[in-house]
Length: 134
Image 1: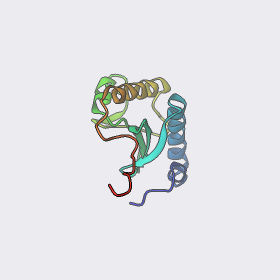
Image 2 (image 1 turned 90 degrees about the vertical axis):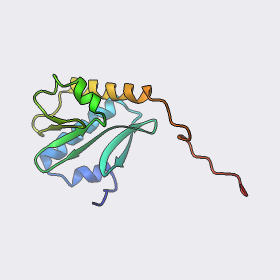
Image 3 (image 1 turned 30 degrees about the vertical axis):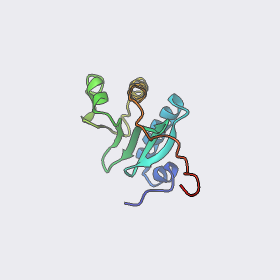
Image 4 (image 1 turned 90 degrees about the horizontal axis):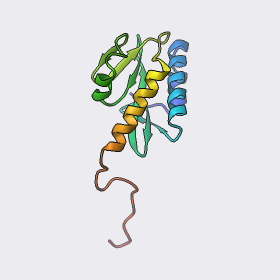
C-alpha cells in the first residue's frame, strides 16, 4: 500500500460521505490539540504530540474508524461507545453517525494523559549528530 503525500491527499481520494466525516473528525482533534503534528503511522493518518502517537483514523469500505492506540481507552468509554462497533484498539462509526464531539474530546484527553504519564525512553528525543571522527 502506498502512503499518500499528505492527509489532505488521503481524504481527497475518499467518497464524499467518508471524506466529510473524517475531515470533521480531523478538524475536531486539531481544535482540541492545536500543537498536534500530522503524520502517517502504519499507513494511517495519525496525529502525534511531543513525538508520541495520539490517535489515528481511517476509512474502510463500509465505515470510518478512530484508532485511539490504546485498549484502555475503549474499555474506559465502553458505556459511551455502546452504539458503536469496537474492538480493543478500534472505534468504528458510520459517516452519517460520527462520534459525539464531547466523547471525542474525552477520548483525546484520556490519550494525552496516558502519553504524558508514560516515562520517556532513554535515547529518544532530538537526535544529535556525532562529532566528526567519533
